[in-house]
Image (cartoon, rainbow, N blue to C red):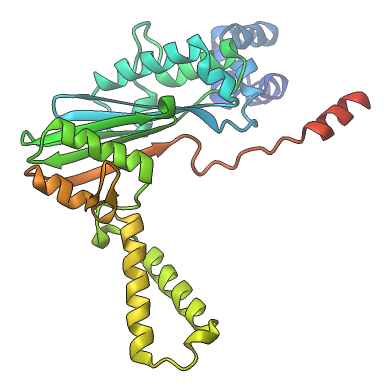
Length: 295
């Protein structure tokens, strides 16, 4: 009915993915023109043209129910779209579908069916076409807890940063306070033994280099230098370890003692910040205007 070269041709014409082109040709019995229209009607061709764009804005979202919680991130190209009602409706639709699904990871989450039978991956393609910017479902995680534990969920800056923590023995208000701490102070790990070893080694090397390059340390003994290095490393841990950070609501306590005073302990934490790890496109307005004037 159609050949591999037909799929290639359709892909070049529309910019759609290979599998989408194959589906289009199957649906249209090999008719190239109808297949192009099929892809356009579904928003796939239009969405594909935006695939090379950088989507580093967006929102994070989390929800909890009984002993399970979810967190995910949806990206767009501009902050303007994050205020769009259609974008917020999309976030809500995804949240409800994911919360009541049994998916455990990102790959499974993309295939979760919505009320109309379409998958989340398909809805994202549609959203790219209807909203007019590249929309991407970037990541997802599901967290489980025991009956004697509580979730703390907190969202900051309207969803730009979201965190989920699990505490044992303390109530939900305490857990939420800790989640607020995670959003505000961005700890790397709950405690020292969970800090990546390469991060610790890098910090040690930085401390040693700085001490060697400081003339004030030239006459100090190795013992004194070791103590100074240990002190600086302890300060480093206090900055990046959740339990050791000063509690934002009462700096006379660290977070560990705040939770301990409430009869609990911190089990785990998870924090999403929109666009982290994505290299954002740097716009130069003057160059853009000049380019348009020369067209």
